[in-house]
Length: 293
Image 1 (cartoon, rainbow, N blue to C red):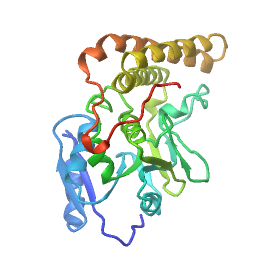
Image 2 (cartoon, one colour):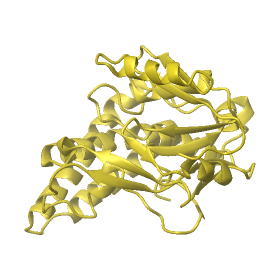
Image 3 (cartoon, one colour):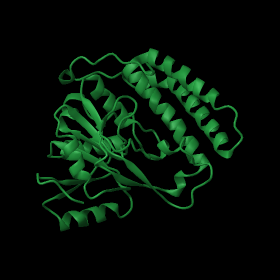
């Protein structure tokens, strides 16, 4: 991978792994002590891991990759260029899939977003809720965390839970605070898609996790009004999928129903367990926001 002329570092955060991941990471650090640092985060979860990296990082641009992502040679250069505008606080690029095994007939375009497949085309474009960069390929100016805080510990993968949307919720804070978010085609990665994720059972669980994750965002940023709006929309989505006789249609119907049920169940416990978004003083007054406006 090519690197820009400015100083850079690679920070590897081991999230309390139980295999040889930490030893492998430390061998990379030993071979490149001036560029590579390894740290351990004991609190399990993607948000906790990323937040640990943010606290430890020295740079003014922080770029995140998943451990199963493979950046293009010019990926980092593309990230730096996209964030050269001080008004742009977050940027991300295309995510191409690296599928493992033979693809099932039911896997059509309706399911690809849930496998982090994402491409907005050949031009740089601004992004707004809820079309934000994917967490497998996303970068920020440090100012974004100074002004809007770290990733929410209530969102993001944690153990076997498929809860997601930590980057979506953080980007929403940025957008409400007046910051810009962009898609850049110059920062492309390939993302490994394990065969275990290309099953009907996993896909239904993934849709359900999305429903819960969206409920958390709606509550944090729009309260009970946001939850009511979400219920109406997700119920309508589930009803629209009725009909269709192919395996893909049947699975998509099961999946959208799982999204609605998970959102509905979350409406009962999320307001009791998770606090509303409270902007830092540095963020200033946030713009009003309601989902599905």
